[in-house]
Length: 289
Image (cartoon, rainbow, N blue to C red; front, side, top):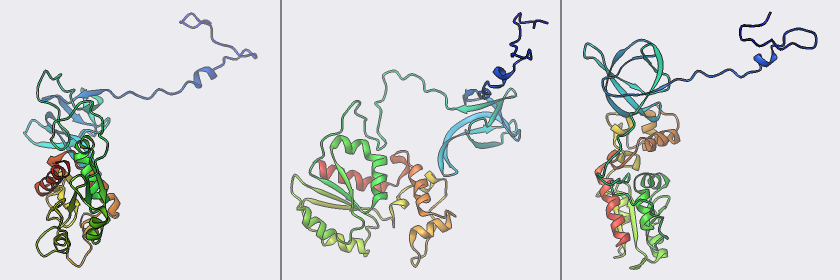
């Protein structure tokens, strides 16, 4: 009997139909369509627990990662926020992935800006490093500066170097031998009256060195708690290592994991406190003058 397709089945040497060509075909993965989360689009969560219209899009820290979120409002006016994870919503009974709508093509409008809020210079190459330097206390400080001011620093040719603390700052400055062409800007944590850091900073007297700082115990604390999805940074007793105390209060077992979350929560200058912004901007101006 010939199948309806008009093609005879493939027979093996013993006259038995050979199905291996069918079974050997890889299974096709179900493709989940992506749908733009346009305002007023009505969707349901994949578990069927909430149905509502899209009223807002945002970003929030979810499981340690900063993700896009969507706010849905049901017919009673109740609102809930959901992470926009793959295959997490239903649209007309179909499983879909919500994504941010594509930005409208911008006509000539505001110039693009860097994470620091400066105007971006399209196609600019990194400048050869200047003789001047910005020194920071540790690698976390350096990573945060790169996160926000990296584009600006590359264009200006400014290198950021971690010191591993400022206990030897006076010696480091003397060895560097600052000059008009080799200035040094130093970013210091917890630079407040009476602190160890302020006493060390007072020992450096050189017109080609600018020491700026912020009042926070650690640069982690210069990141706004709202960027991390918490109301405020926990209070830590002075007898407890600050980072260990923060991790314990926020139930994070490893300080390295906590730092990864802190850094991932920073997208731009808007995610850090003003004293840090002011201190870094003044240092950049000083070493590039």
